[in-house]
Structures are given as structure tokens and as C-alpha cells.
Amino acid sequence: MTEPFSFVCDFCGQPTTITEPNYSSGNIDFSTKKSEHEWCGFSYDAVACPNPKCKKLTFKISFVKYGMYRGEFQPVETIQKWDLLPESSAKPQPNYIPKAIRDDYYEACRIRDLSAKASATLARRCLQGMIHDFWSIEKPTLKKEIDALQSEVDVPTWNAIEAVRKVGNIGAHMEKDVNLIIDVEPREAQLLIGLIETLLKEWYVAKHDREEHFKKLEALAQKIATAKKAGKGKGAKVAPAAKI
Image (cartoon, rainbow, N blue to C red; front, side, top):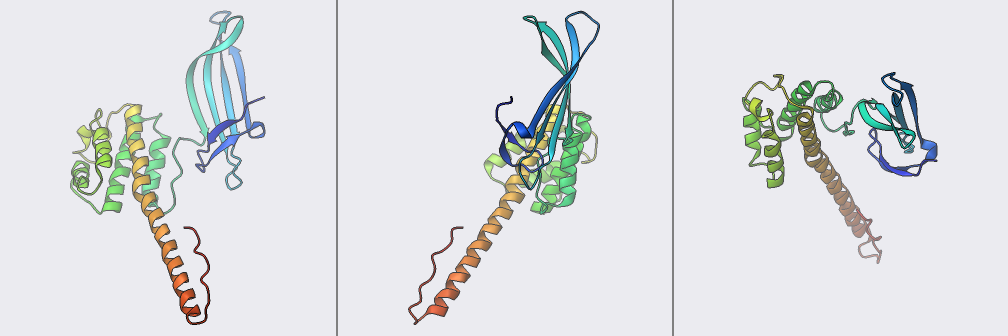
């Protein structure tokens, strides 16, 4: 029996606790015929999201090598992993973020392990799209557009952008066309993806949440003002204010 474990759904982004009915795992082993103690096989993990608004299946497969340990076959090396559902580790992004930006982000995540340089190219294009859309900054190169951000963003955000820009070949190609394919490692591509995820949250999501909060404050203020006006001179009481 599997013990309950914490889980964040890659589809809906909701943290939850997974119990036995929503989880399944197993192994398929076979001999490689290299030696009597060497085997390979596949292991799988399947998780059904318990969120009633989601209920999507996360399904992952690993190709592993087994070896004899204390009289039992044990996994000793993971040769390769496949995220079948969902296809990547991309975090769900709200629809109020422009579709072109979301599409570039999702695609950059999906092909990160297949082609890091293609993933990094899409990530750079995504970053440029965000700068154009959110800050209305357009310069001849992405480097100059990022430089123009320094006076717009706070120090921690700028330091993070600068740190990523100085890694490997990422910064060296900012002067050139944003669609140029650059040679980067998977971890460098992931750095760009991680930066984009942070900026999506700090820019778009934070702005949207702030606007929604102010709308609720405005609606509540109007409600209280209307109630006070209607009850003026009649001894009417205003209902307690709702929590925002």
C-alpha cells in the first residue's frame, strides 16, 4: 500500500495529497543478457488529480537498469525519463496573458530536453514578447530592450535577469536576432524558462490580482455609500463590511 504523499498537479497547479485510489505504479523488467545479475526495465507512475475541476492524469515512464543488491534486484541507474502526460513541466498560465507569449513558453518547455537550443530560442522570443507587451519597450535588439528594463523593475528582478543573462552563451547572443538558434545546455535553457515563469507571475499575475482586489474594494465602497445614503435620517444601520 502506498503512503499518502504531497503532489502539485502539472495541469491545474493545485497542491493536494494523493492517496491510494488516485495513484498507481509498477515495473516491467527484462534481462539484457549481459550478465546473470544485470536487468533493465520500465517503471511507471500514474496520478489522477483529485481536483473535481481537473481530474487529469499525470503519467511518467522511466527506463532503468537493475542490479543485484543483497540478493534482490534493485534499480541502480535511470537511463532515460519520459513525461507522457503532461508533455512537459510547463506551469499552467492564465488566459489573460497574451496567447503568443503562452504558446512560446509552453513550446519552450515541451522541447527543452529534445533540443535545448531550440527551447532557448523560443524562451528568448517569449521574453522579448513580454517586454514588448507589458512594458511597451521596443529596441533594435533584445539586449537593449533588457537594458531599458533596469529603470522600470525593482533591484531583485533586475539582478535575476542579469544573472541569467551572464550564463553561458545566453548573453552573448542577445545582440543578434531573437530567432537565431544558439547552442546552449539544457540547464541553461531551463534557467531562461525559470526566469520567464517568475516574470509571468511578477508582472502579469501580480497586476491582474491587484486590479481584481481594487475592483472589490471599489464595489464594497460603493455598496456602503449607497446603503448609508438610503438610510440617512431613518436610523438605518449599514451591514458589516465583507472581507476582501
